[in-house]
Amino acid sequence: MAENASKKKQSWWAPAQKHLMTATGYMIPFVVAGGIIFALAVMLSGKPSVPTTGNLGKLASIGSAGLALFIPALGGYIAFSMADRPGLAPGFITAYLATQIHAGFIGGIIGGIMAGFAVKYLKKIKVPNNYRTLTTIFLSSI
Image (tube, rainbow, N blue to C red; front, side, top):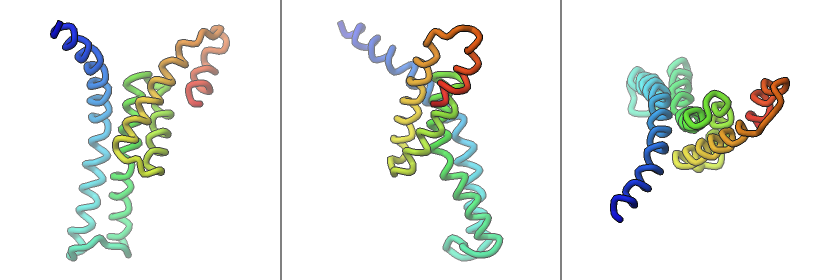
């Protein structure tokens, strides 16, 4: 009895973990690059505050933008892992919208999962071969 419950948990968790780990691998460069650029701007300013003017202010803005993109990247690549390339743009967009409503990290994950499931099931709609390319471009993006 306990083995069946453990298999159910594992069967649910294993794909979810795979999608999260795939997305995390793609998200890490955004965090690392953004963090290093941002830290470099603060370090070069010589003050314990974020520079807001001049070239160092611009450098800090670039680093901040990189850090701001990590949630949309996470959601986009969760959807990519679930639904392949057609899920990428909807995942990025839903995770970006999650950041706009201040849903944070968890909102980005939920947005990516929702987009991944939606695109995965939209791909199962039977379409004549003549329209298959249009379906990939238009229907998946909606």
